[in-house]
Image (cartoon, rainbow, N blue to C red; front, side, top):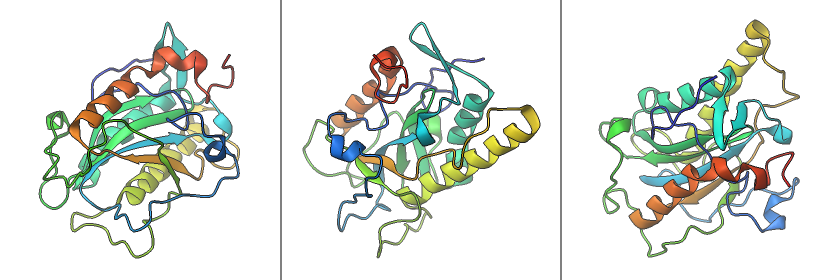
Length: 234
């Protein structure tokens, strides 16, 4: 078992639920359709807050102990794949990340063309260079999305991948590794799919909002008892 706390390298903390913005039952409907921001280019350089949940809220990645997430082998595998994203995909960077028993929360940064910054050097983001616009300092509802490809008509940046591309690869890599764990290490099997088809995303508008979201992610383990993704939530 292991716990992790560092940003972008060995972080294993998470947020309060599959939908980080609780309260909209329509969005949380199991049979919801994917909602996208029309005409928004999800290959734009910038920071994106994402939440990805396991199918049927199955808890595969560890347990909460004294308000801290203790990772099992599967959870450690998830953490490794997250931290390898900038290595495997130039133009993709990562920031705060938290693994919970049945979902993950993280900030994905598309840095655009040019060399990918080292994850340890991502504490400050130039919001002008990363084309993050707007004055909002509160993060509103995330948008539920499908995970295959980008919105129609949107091409990836020269650096390679759009946000949906990155999420799809993260899901695919972790699923393949988990299947290996089931076959070779007797990890608990999952029915059908490891991850839900959709995920939630929120476009980070400015640096103040980025810091608010970082805090939100870091504070989540202690809120697990009230988490709507917790099968035993009060």
